[in-house]
Image 1: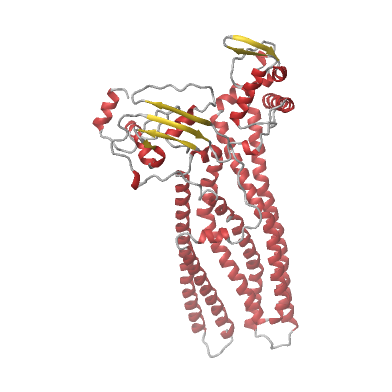
Image 2: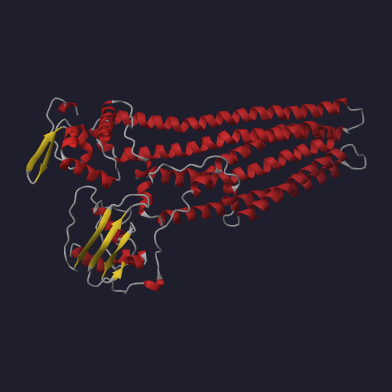
Length: 559
């Protein structure tokens, strides 16, 4: 825009939002100039201009118009234009009140959600049954492992047991335990598939039946994050996180149990270690849980910004704002990545302390066995205790780590659940109140005191419209941007439900019939045409309701 910096710019517009940035404004009415003055002078002295601005603010849901507020608004708009066009970084200065914003802030849970997301996940398609089967199978597998090692430790120096028998029994027990391990793995796969299908179908059904007001107030990037990254974690990561958390926890406590049975003195160290480990886990999760939630919300903002940048590429290039949008994208990437790195550092902090505690238990157990009188422990059980003690160092750390990993990933179930219970549109089928098969016959449309608002807490967009159109009439709806033309057409298809009033087509109140009958009987040519992937015939008749001959007849008449 530097080419126009020393030129006089004349703009003819009805957009009141742009007026504060101009040096002089000509207010016209009935083909005459009523007043010529700067924005603040017109606002202070001209009643016609004040009424125009007030009417615009009432329509946009903004009240309390006065000189000071407009002065501040003009300053904010100027800051936004200067920094936005000429700066390399983008600063949002205009801050409308939250209750009047169309795009709502993304919801984010805070604090400990407890067992609710776990129960929600396991309640899908007999999830508790599959999980219980996996737990029982792994318990039997661990019992088999302990029996296998106990057999070897007890009979390795027994002269009555031959080497062949010792190995033969050891192998048989091992093969049997492998079967239970295989059944556990198959069970967790079935659990993951069944729960993923159930959650996906509920989420898809919720999105497809959501009202248009939901998509008006929810950015595309927010929806994409739920159906991509969050759903991917639900499909692939959470089932394995469940089985790893289950198996490592049972392994850790079984290792500790074997160690305590052989050297009961280890209880003096192991019990405080367990208590301290649980306390450290809760201390870690309080921060890690919030970091994962922040990671999810910042990822939505990043995806939304990328989508808007791609769709507005032409405008960005026209105003030479590539650097500003690139810098904004890098800033959003940094915000998204920072929470991940903080979470990684917190995990390393937890692992270091758990390894120290595990090493302390093993050292104490080895010290007890070393100072005990000779003959207290057989060599086989000493070796078994040391083996399980060394495994405890790894299994205990891995157990807490897997539990924390599951707690972090289960947040994706929590985020997906936010969109699984979206308030749906009216029922698609109402069998007891269906219109006649040939409805509408004449096309008479009567509007009675129609009032529309997009949300219950939002201001009215259409204020008590009453009119009547006879069948066959060609009606043109004229109005400036934001006057409600698109909203009025959307009300005919019940994309937005009326706050008050009725729309009657051929003596049928459209609010009393189902959406399928209504929308299938009315036709509309969209403002922005869309071509679907596939053949031309599929685009003309995507539902396959008409024959080729009917489609050719329509094509010949150019309808």
